[in-house]
Amino acid sequence: MVSYQDIYRRSPSPLADFLGENTAAMIFQDERLRVFSELFFQDSDQPTLRQEWLSPTVFDYSCQSLRYVDEFLLRLHSEQAASDKWAGLILRGGAYVGEVIRRNCTIVDYHWLNYDDAVQVNPSMAEFGKRIGTAFALYHAPRTLCFPLARVEECLNLGYEKRVFAFAEVMLGQVVAAPSTEAAESLYQQARQRCTEAIELSVYDDREVILGITPPLESALRSNPTHIPSLSLLSELLIMLKAYEEAKSLVRKLREIEPDNDVHQTKQHRLEHLNVSNFDECFDLEEWVLEQWRARGI
Image (tube, rainbow, N blue to C red):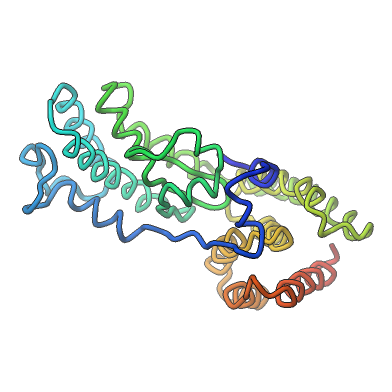
């Protein structure tokens, strides 16, 4: 898990450019990892290590299919092979595990990130270094990263206690727990009150002030990932922080929930067409956000 306070209070950090004019967009690796996941159980040219032990018909991307992955990995526990074969197995097996999580999660949108973009989301990940287990991560906005490739590597090294089926259950359980609208609304009201006070004192664009408002919104979204007021306000605070890519991700979620909402549409359009190197455009966007807050009585 990662909070916006953790991200933006690190200095120096790999997000220095992310917060400035040279904002670099994260590039989702979804299609690439989808292909790797299919190669796990069906590659006639360069087969996965011990691919002959796998029956393609059972790998239907269901959660139950991960039990077959566990059986396969545990069987390989004492296998000897060249390092490139092991790396290929971890990459393809981890891609399959991650794709199962992606396809069976209906509440949030998981996407694949490469190591460098994962470090943008959570700079502390740099401590683990770039290796096969951390080469790709599953991510969903605004806070979650997990590493299916690393889990496959752990299962191969440590055995039963690191089963991938249990890993997927935990990751899906974090987002399928019953959302609490009441708790989310209460936390949102706390953040809204802080935002109102910041506007009254004309410090609504101060980074430290904003970082004092975001925690209750993050907690609200942990209680209910589809709480629209929290998603809206958090996306706007991210705009004030110049974290435009994170804001875009939240606005895309808002558009999925309320596709006909004019404010969501306008916000998405402004973000998608924003020239982050143009001071006037960025300033105009912040002024538009302030107008929205005044219109909502914040």
